[in-house]
Image 1 (cartoon, rainbow, N blue to C red):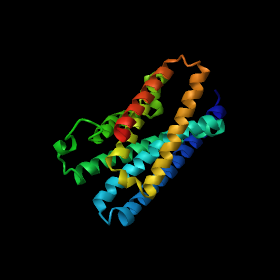
Image 2 (image 1 turned 45 degrees about the vertical axis):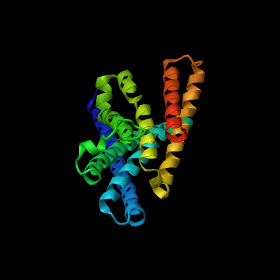
Image 3 (image 1 turned 90 degrees about the horizontal axis):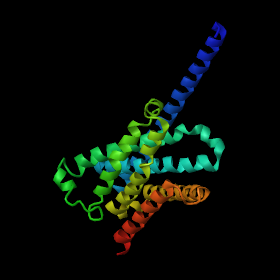
Image 4 (image 1 turned 135 degrees about the horizontal axis):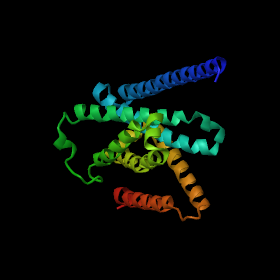
Length: 244
């Protein structure tokens, strides 16, 4: 490689790196503004001016909504292949969603439970204590966040990385049951409606592609049977939580 080719390669790399950081900065501003709007809605209209509770709730709604958007974006990339060029958005949505979930856990531990672990785990039945659902989702989301870099993908190999990130389905089901059961009345407002809409879109997209890919594989793949097990468990939990 001559000096001219090396200079061109270095210039292209520098431009890509600059574009990456600009995009990351822009997304970070969006995520912070999104949370801030959620906080204002909680503080002024829903939580009666209680700053601590407003933080707990705004972090939770922001986290769950962004995680749902991350899952929905996966479906959009398949429906509209040209949008796959923006695949990093999915990563940013997922990572920022976990960061807000982490802040939700910390703020709830302080504001709601006053650092009393026993009051958090008063029951290990998730239908009685929906925090158990959150406790299932949280470590999975943390592992996914910690492995959401190109360097980690390269070290783990794509196949191993992909298998780890398939755990998102268990995490997301747990997230949904957590926010549906923890305090249903909190969903009857603008942040709640947005969260429910995003959740419906995410679930629809995942089911659509699950069925389409399963059909392509003649419903014989390992993923199909695992998916059926998860769907069955979800229906059973839904029945026990809302029907029985």
